[in-house]
Image (cartoon, rainbow, N blue to C red; front, side, top):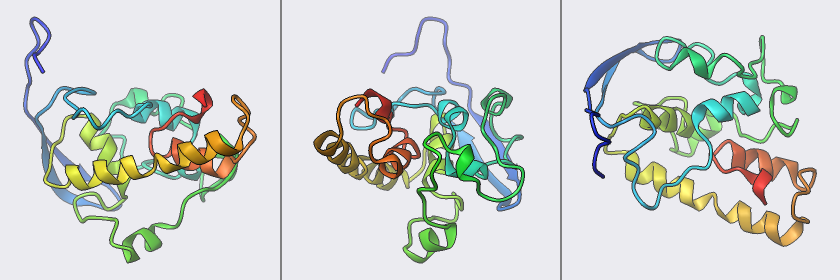
Length: 176
């Protein structure tokens, strides 16, 4: 993809020091929110997801130094533990991190899982794990088909857990 006139990619090195990673560094080598492959078209940005409410409000609370402050301005964040009221659909719809780790879904570079990978990818990081994560994102599309097959168009109360799962994978089921 050609860069917009006057735009330049500025490689930036990020060093992470949060509750789950100390001294991890990576480079942002792509334009923010751009340079995605044709088969990866998330419908929501990380900021939109945090604003709507994902992961019971506990995800990425200690990552403010790594990501834009604007992502947190209207984010629905829990004060303490996971809170279903912080989720857009008002339900908890994810397995605990320990289960993600047990199943081998979490890589050391992104110890919080897919959403952390997506936030870093969105900001311009590219790694050898991108293909695997994009494949996992595409696999979530099966939930779109189940909502279309079992819910009336626009009925956001139908299958709230499945809709919350889709939201947590950057799919916007409000359009279904």
